[in-house]
Image (tube, rainbow, N blue to C red):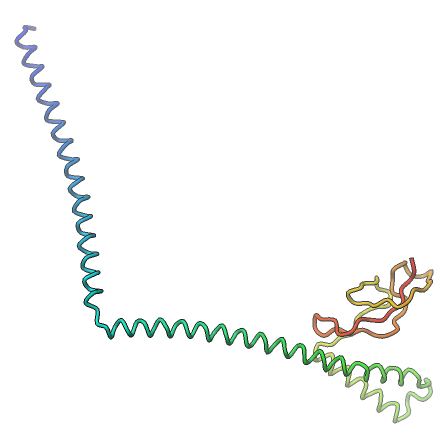
Length: 202
C-alpha cells in the first residue's frame, strides 16, 4: 500500500471520529435542553399558581379560614364528648360499687339468720319467704355483675383474701384457705370486699 493511500484512510478515520463526537455532543445538548424546558415549565406553573393565590377573592380566604376553624372546633368537641363519656362511666362504676358495699351487710344478715334456723323449720312459711327474698337479692346482684369470691380450698391470694388467723389442718396444703369467716365479693373485675379467711399455717 502506497503512502498516499495510507494518508487517505487516516483522513477518512479522522472524519468519522469527528462525526461521532458531533453526534454525542448534539445528543447531550438535546438532553440538557429537555431538562431546561421541564424546569421552565415547572417555574411557569408555580408562578401561575402564585398569581392565582394572589388574585384569590378575600371572601374565599375568609371561607377557608372559617372552615378550618370549624374543623378544629368539631375535633375539640369530639374529644370533649369522649372524655365526658369516660368520666360518666367511671362515676357510674364508683356509684354502683358504693351501693353494693352498703347492700352486702344485708346479704350477710340474711345468711346469718337463715343459718340459725333449725332444719325442721325450713318449711315454715315465714322462713320460706325470707329465703325467697334472700335468693332474689342474690339473683339481682348477680345480674349487676356481683359474684362471690371463691375461698375455701383455694390457695391464699392477698388480691382476693384477707387472712385474719392461721389454723392447723392435715387435709389441706399449707397456705390454703381452710375457713371463710366473711364472704368476699367482686363487682365485674374489681374486688368490692375481700374474703375474711383462716389459712392453714405453714
